[in-house]
Structure formats: structure tokens, C-alpha cells
Image 1 (spheres, one colour):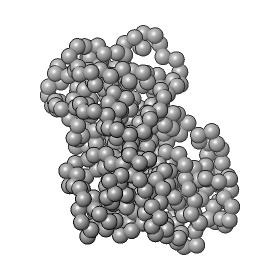
Image 2 (tube, helix red, strand yellow; image 1 turned 60 degrees about the horizontal axis):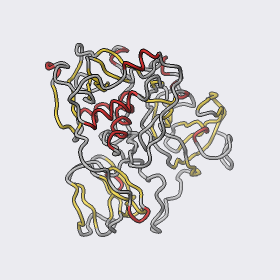
Image 3 (cartoon, one colour; image 1 turned 120 degrees about the horizontal axis):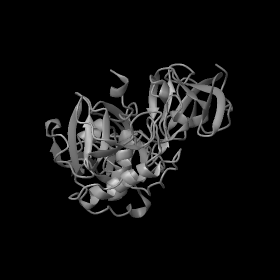
Length: 396
């Protein structure tokens, strides 16, 4: 696969034992994608030429109000850094990215707050609709259930209207851009560049386009102090108690939004390749396994319902909370080592020991301490809550 084919825009928001790639960005899993207040516009890393700014606008008539609003939102990010994994936090908006593991241009993405291609599109439509319609990778977005129309690659750009999404990839989609009219599109292209306007590209592995259905009303805020989360999957059921054998309260034929009041450990469930024993209590009093809620296995910011407590750490380890989005663990104590796991949102990790290794600078902090987790992977202590050297954790 060539560098041009490896567009840094297919970040999966997948959490082990919990998250399907179709859920969530993202993060994903997300992961991750909620109707909370959207963050403010990211600060451009460098000044964008006035001519380029003027070129980013709705350049053709006929688009829906939603499509035009999405174009304006994306154009508002012109000049912001491309960042691999950026834009896949718990809510739509710019985030720091990370090294993609292969492209030298991506080595500094952990210091660049911005978007990858699908993160930008997710943000644009969240701004336009007030809903997190497109959380996920560019491949997820290509297969979205929110499509009002689809256009083949053979049709080129002739039928497109501002706000339509253009996709590239053969078999698996790896890049997405937002059409703005006049043969132009706005995109987060690749590491080392900024969000830009470019002529449309309908050759090579161009896969076609999707027009997003942004109709519908913005959902009301969560009831009873709950938190809104997105679900995934089809024919997902809620129950009167946190077990699959309890009576069914509701059935969701497709992805939807739920208001979560609290969560607790209960019956262990294995479904669609994931296993989790955490259930969420919804605002109507029903229960839903966290397997089908976008986000990590234990939802961030959601209190315990007062049920069973979290199992103690295994293997003589100590449990710590992480912070930040798009955090990775590695096979060695080095950011260039292979990625073992990816945390789109804060979670809990079990640390067995720690060691001084590669010095890392990220999100304004510098530290050479790394923690070894119970699965054998390594994580920089920067993203573990606590002092630079964790108290009570032995040296590896």
C-alpha cells in the first residue's frame, strides 16, 4: 500500500473485550460519541492564506440546510493540523493524535491538536445537526445508516451537492472528504499537512459518495441527570433487570441514543465477539449491557448503581485511572513499538510494575517512566493519573 493510499483517516475506536469497529469515534470505539456540548473551534497551527480561506465555502446551490451547515463547519477548521486519530474523542471536536506506527510524518501527531479525515467529517455534521451522526472511521461513515442517497464512482462528481461525502478505498475505505461544490472539496489529508481545500479526485480508488440525511430534531437533554450515549447493533434489547433472561422492556432495531443513569457489574454477557459484565441502567429504569453502548467497557463519567464492585486487580497489580483520548499501549516501552491496545476515552488499567525507558513528551508533559500492564503491554505514565513515578508500584 502506497503512502497516498495510507491516508490517516481510518482510526478505529475499538476497545478490547467491548467495542466493535462499527462503533466508535471512535474513538472508538469509539470511542465514544455523545450529544454533549461540542468543543470550540481548534486554533489553527499556522495562518491560512486569505485566498484559501475565501475558497472554502458553499460553492454551489441545491444543498440542504444541513449540508451547507456541515460545509461551513468544516471550512471553519481550515488551517488546523491533520492529526492521526484526531477528532475521535468522547465528543466531536479536535484532539491530539498519535504516531500511526509507520509514517515518519506522523511522529509528531501527538503534539498536534486537530483532526484526521473521519474526525473532521464527524465534527462537521455534529455541528450541523446537533447530533453525533458519524462517529467512527471513514469506512464506518461510508456504510452509515444515515445515508439519504448514494453515488457510484462511475458517476463522478456531477450529481454531488455541497455537504456530500466523498470516499476512497478498494474493499476497505481509507479516506473521506467533504464536497463543497464547484469541483472542490475540504479535507484533512495526511500527517504534516493542515486542513485544506483541494480539487476533487475521482480517479484511482475513488469509491463513490454519500449524501447524509440530517433531518430530525435534536434530542432533548438526558432525563434525571443521565448521560446520553450512542448504541450500535441491530435488534438490541433492554431488560427489566441486568441479565439477558429478564423480561424485555424495549427493542432497538438499529443504532439510537439512550440516557444512562448509572452502571454496575452484573451478569457476564458474550455477544458479537465481545464479553462484558457491566450493565447500564437507563432513564426508563431498564437495563442494557454495555457491549452495545459506544465507549469503553466501563462508561466514563457514569456513577456506579450500588451493585457489585469492580473485581480486584489480578496478578499482584494495582488499578489506576487513565486520562486523555486516543491513548495507546505498546509491546515495548517505546512509542514506536507496535500498538497493543487503543483507549479512545479514560479507562482503568492494572499496573504490575514500572521502569524508566524512552522519554515521551505529550499534551504538555514530559516523562520517561512507563508502566507494564497485566496484559504485558506498556503505557507511558503521562496518561496515568498520579505523579510521574506511581506510588506503591515496584520497578520492573
